[in-house]
Length: 194
Image 1 (cartoon, rainbow, N blue to C red):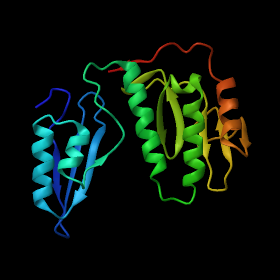
Image 2 (tube, helix red, strand yellow; image 1 turned 60 degrees about the vertical axis):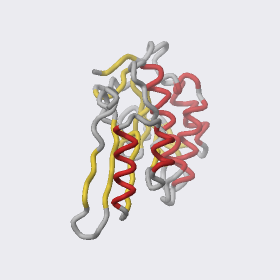
Image 3 (tube, rainbow, N blue to C red; image 1 turned 90 degrees about the vertical axis):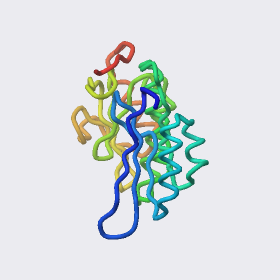
C-alpha cells in the first residue's frame, strides 16, 4: 500500500445491513474518499482498489458508491499543494450541501477562493465559519478575520470566532474585501503544521 495512505477504514452499521468506508492520508488524517453502501461486494472492490494504490478516480470507477471529497493526494507534503487540496475539498463540499443557507455559504467559499491573498492561505472551517492559517493541519496557525455566512443571506466578518465586529455585508465579495483589508501584510508562505 502507498505510504501516503492510511489503511481503509470500514465500519459495519449495527441497525441495518450497511457499511461505511473512509480513506485518509496520514499527515493530516483528512478524508480523501468516503461512502456508504448496502453492497458488501462494492466495499470489497473499494478496499482492493485502495490497497492496490489505484488513483482516487479509479477507486470511484471500481466502486460507484465511493464519494471523492475533493482532496487529492500530496505524497511529498508540499504545503502549497496541501493548501490547494484543502481549497478544492472545501469547494466540493460547499457545492454539495443541502442546507437552506447553502448558496450563501457556497458564495462565501467561492469569493474567498477567488481572492489571491486568501487563496494562498490554508482554509479551514468550524461551525460554518471560514478561517485561515499560515500552517496546515494538524497544528493550525490562525491568521486574520473570521468570515461567516448567515442563514439570513448576510455575511459577517469578525476579529474573533463567529463575531461580526468588523461588519455585516450583503455580498460575499464585500465581506471578503474587508477580510483581506484586515489581514496582516505578507503573512508568509504556508508551512507544514506537524
